[in-house]
Length: 509
Image (cartoon, rainbow, N blue to C red):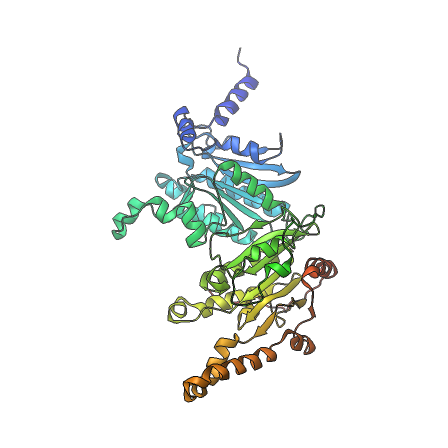
């Protein structure tokens, strides 16, 4: 006798198994997990509520139309998700795939919950292009919705595999993109297409691989070695984020910093001697709370999330160990993007300054260093969350502006005893002002003259003079930095920013 209920169970089981066994074997050969296994690791047990399971169910070779969509919880917090099933038509997008994804975006907007994009896809099905490419609820709507969602709810992308052509824009529009080394890739045209179109011979890894995007192009934010590590990184990042812009970030139990050297030993007195700013960061944040964003890209600037006294904070810091901490085109873009992220989700910003300024020279000018520098200044100016600028050591030229100097709506600019602020360093300043005089002196007298003028210049930019002129708000001992920052952020947490009415800002590109 026909049993409708059993038929339904059999159909659900068939769909949930995905594609043919040989495609599952291919996943294992690449150290990749089946999509539903990924979801089990990512979400709380028995929390997945799937929608669109029967999409394209009447096509036996397209179970769920190659994607799993729905809602689930992570540490009890609801999220929307869409996840490619690469065992079905290589995870490619058809009309129903796109419709399922759009519905999840709309659900995230309605419920104000984060949305996760788990990509392992061959992109759009060219054979079905009229059905999924040009229309009002076709492929382009995904990107339109991502832009509308931006700054409303967190958007996180994990690239487990390829994300080619149009789908490559999904990670670009997300707040955070995690890429699995050797398996993840993103590209507008495959190596074969590139060779046919422009005659260039290249490889997938060189042109669009995970390491390239995390260290050269800047598309990737976090490079991981396994899918398990990718899932853990996603969960950790989400733990710093609120459900939407309307909420404050979650608060956890306060921890003391990891044991290490005192700040007075970490920061060299000689401003030309590089040091590791990350060592300083570890001594002021709660232990084991550092999550660096874009660690491998533009390493002269450090951006990352952490906790201080249990509360989330975004840190922007100069790294003198790399290119002297000088700001370049990419470092300005990196800083701007991170500042926008923190400002969107009510995460206070802490700037740790040790910067000689922006790079100069014909090469960077041709790259648009002024445009890109203006982008970072725009981000600092627009940020209405609590902002603290700590002058750790040197802060010269427009580097002061990029690192949230006093003129940029900063709640407080505080200095360590090692700090100095100036238009430029003593060496460059004396050369700029007294070059002709130096050249006119006898060779034997030049060194003494330069030394005298440098001493005068150093006294002119003395940190105590800057304090007396109210350029800075406070000078704090090294050992008091952490407690001072925590106390100030607590006092500023209910800040009500003044925002001038306008239709929209025009950002530097």
